[in-house]
Every structure is written in C-alpha cells, then in structure tokens.
Length: 410
Image 1 (cartoon, one colour):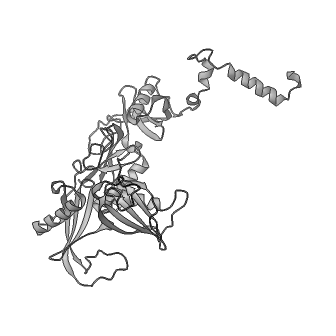
Image 2 (image 1 turned 135 degrees about the vertical axis):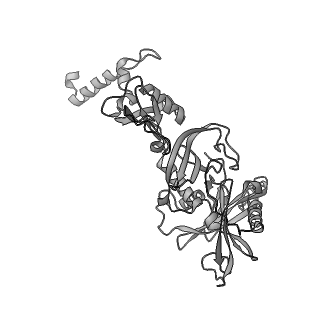
Image 3 (image 1 turned 180 degrees about the vertical axis):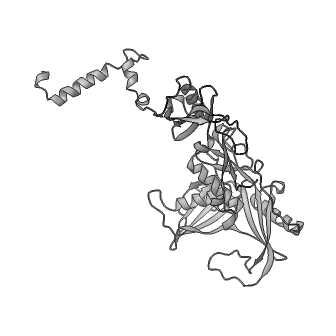
C-alpha cells in the first residue's frame, strides 16, 4: 500500500509516527525524545565565549523568577557573554568605591515574559542584577520626563543615577496620597535621577508601567528667597490644600522666583485679550502627594493656578494618547490647548449618571483638559492623581468628551 502512495505523503506519515512515539505511555511519563522537542529546549541562548557553568544557570533563573513574579517555567536565558568585572561585579552607584581587581565572569541576559534583566555573574563571587541595564525604556522615559517637569530642567541635563530592583508592599508602592491601594506585593524599581550635582529625584515604579515620585527619598534644593513673605506662602498653600484635599502640612513651597505679570497674570486660554500692564509678583511651585502645582501671584492682586504647568505629565501623555485610536497616527500638531483644575461635587465628575446611585456625593478634585489638532477640540474630565486610567464617553455635539477616572495604579 505504501508503494502506491505519493512520496510526500509517505514521508508525512512516517514523521507523524515518529512523533507519536514520543508521547507518554502513562500520565506523567515523558520520554527523552519528547523533552528534546519541547518549546523551551528548542530555544538555545546566544553564547559568546565560554559557556555559563551549569551550577550557576539555575540560580540565575530562580532569582529572575522571584524578582519578576513570573513562574520559573516561563523564564529563560537568552544570551551569555564572557566579561571581566571588578570587586563590585561592576555594578555599584557612581560614588561607591570598588576593588580594582579583574574577575572573570559573564554578562547574562534573562527573559521572563515582557521583562528582560541583565545579570553580572562569576563562578566564585556570586551574581548581581544590573538595574541600569534592566529597567525598561518606557520606565526610563517616564521617569526622566517627570523629573524634567519637576525640576524645570531640559531632558538632556538629566540622567539615571542608580536603579535598584524592589518588591513593593502594595499597589501604591508604599507611598501616601495615591488613593486606594491593592493589598498585594508588586515587583518594580527604585529609580534615581540626577542633574550631575547633588540633587536627586527618586521614583518608585512598576516593572513596565506606573511611575510615582518619592519626595522623602529625594534630595532637592529649595529656592525660596528671604523676601518671599509668609503671607504669600500661606495663601498659596491654603489654595492648593482646599483644591486637592491635601493637608497643608503635607505641602511645601520648593521654589519662589520674582516675576512681572500682565493683567491676566500671564494665565489665560490662547486668544484671550489681557491688559498689558506690569504687575510685580511671584512664580511659586508647591509640591505634595505626587502633585506639583505652579502659581502666579501678583502682590496685592491675588493669585492664579497655572494649569498647563501643573497638569501631571503622565496625565497629559494619557490624554493625548487617547484622542486618536491606537490604529491611527495622531497629527503632529495635536496638543494640550488648556487645562483647568476642577473640584467635582460627585464621583461622576460632570458626566450623567447611568442610575441615581451611580455617583457618590462629595468633593472629587480633578482637571478639565482640552486638546486640539487645530480643527477639533476634545475635552476631558480627569482625576487628579498620577496613575489615572482612561474611560471614554462622548458627551458633546461639538467635540468629543472623555473621562479619566482615578483608579488604583497597576
């Protein structure tokens, strides 16, 4: 019968028979041949130089699984490279001295789902995780962007100083003022940014998303001159506390610089006519509970919140990303047109309730953010805190309106 079959079909049947021989004869039994055709075994790591010792590889895989919260069976070594390391395994903060010795070792890249970590390993001196080489580009970009916003420095003046892998105790990464937190441990990073001086901006992050500022761990030089009056300080702190619900003791003025304003205190939507007069005053920056607000103060003439400067950059990025579907490229002129702080009187934040009990009464601070591409405007009602997630709803006949409700950071 086989003689009458086409050669291709005969080959296919023989291959299938060979494959069936590799199936276990009983549940839980696997032959040597079957293990050779498993997906993990088919993927061989790229090796440069001597191979990693067999006793070291399992330890590295287990460490990666533990740090990433990924099952061990989904962790694999994808690259090993011979290298020479110093007494710190060439992994230490810039100001930490290390023994200038030459230890033979390996640079090992390990993958666990979407995470890719780099280790430095030696046969006799153990191994270390290289945080700077392992933190994702997305986290790096978000951290530097936020540090630039907080410091007022351009991105090119900032750089990562140190990155350390962490396991946070909850979904808020142990930081206050973020909102309700998932009561579960979270893998992530502690990322420190520097401007080359003694200043440090420290962040707590997830492995691939959510960036939260850690003011207590940061070292930031306050710039408040002696002629900045206590009365002006109190007025600014009181306004921010009232708008956000954050206690005054949790807020601090980190910058006050003299300025001259026009009749609108230099804060008005584009196209608004403002009186061209010179009002002496201050530009004041206040921080607290992930917020960084900028006020314009005119001596004896009151104050205004600068919404465009105060809107968190992660929230701004989320709004702009939501305007167009992921399948469409947004136009290059898409931008934030205006941002106004708002305290809503219920949890629906100005959107119609689906039922009488849907909206909880109370004070819910947030933002009204308007974006534009030059032709159309999209208005967003948002939560206040960094880490808000998007929930889109069309509510206007003239332009799109979508709601970002603050939720627990992932």
